[in-house]
Image (cartoon, rainbow over all chains, first blue to last red; front, side, top):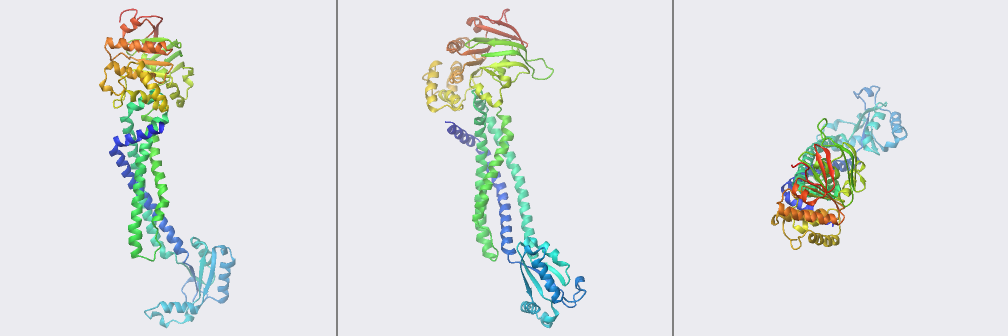
Length: 303
Length: 230
């Protein structure tokens, strides 16, 4: 009996207040689309990091002859210094961060340079002009700085270079995009909450006669308030579903359909990632409506 | 059934109290008129019994509950023991007579069977059998008040509070309503009725409690409206 009563009231409330309910759904839709877009962008960043950082290495350039670097003033790196640096990486304090160290010899460095050189600028170069390079793979690429600090000042080290820097601009951009989306999402969520508050208030006022009678005959406060809360929650959940649908189509057409076709070497998020965001969006919608109800209802349906 | 022990109520600090040191005891099955001019404290009296308001000082017991100590989540249980009838009927305009009465049982979680059994019985008692499907605007004032009484009493509360129930009705219709309230009273229900209607009070010859400026000026068995004419 009670359930039927509650759902009947919710249905009637939404029907009577349909434009308000629709506006709540739309505002929630827009705000949660931003929330979802921010979450998906972060998932994309994480996915790129996972894919790329696994491939990148830290390169430790050792002192070649005639280096201008301060640390190389004492001349080119010796074999003994090279062994010391490798020992620091493999057996020192940072050894648990280091997965492997590969010593690229002068000859290999030379071959790589020449192979990559189409212009012929480096044709004068001899292997003797170069120094070996240590290619270090880290167990956790995020720990670059620790490894860099441990090796940077060692005798024979010219410079330490993190290949991740190549990607940092892209990640900075994606992180900035996330912040923008999150900021818009917050503004929209505040709007959604105010709108839900207004909707519930109007709904409560328009049904004041019912709620007064319910109060008089001893209906519990929860039964009086629940229909209004559910009304807001249903409208907001409708918005969340729209947002999920919007994100799903966005990922399908923009990411899977378009980006994957034009820039194919990047590992993109997919529609399945939208599903992992979806429950959170619904939860946020219900939470928004619940918070708005709590703020409003005690004043308008007092027991 | 209802006991007020040195009850005072002040709405705004410093203003004249709406009720001032009231001591009243109403027994189970009593029929009591609460009389007095506007602003005498009748409404406040009823609001305190319904626990819509709390007393500023003094103790109040209703249906075995000490209202000063009643937590707000227990208030609905108190209200199920009190039926309330108002001058303006307060019916739901888009619900039929049957639905209006059933509503009171629905919202306290009564089963469908209870509702199907009790509502027709109650409509029969108030003399509205056969008018179940009418909407309130299709009824006369007296009939609307009968619906309101049916709604207030359908849960068989031990107390019935009536706030000027005949205030909007002509004298002839009022007599019918009073007969109905009298019949309800004879089932053992305590009836407390606030009224301005001197003719009714004089006819019924029930206990009369008179308030004046928030003070109890008369509590008389088988009384009339006013000792001096109003």
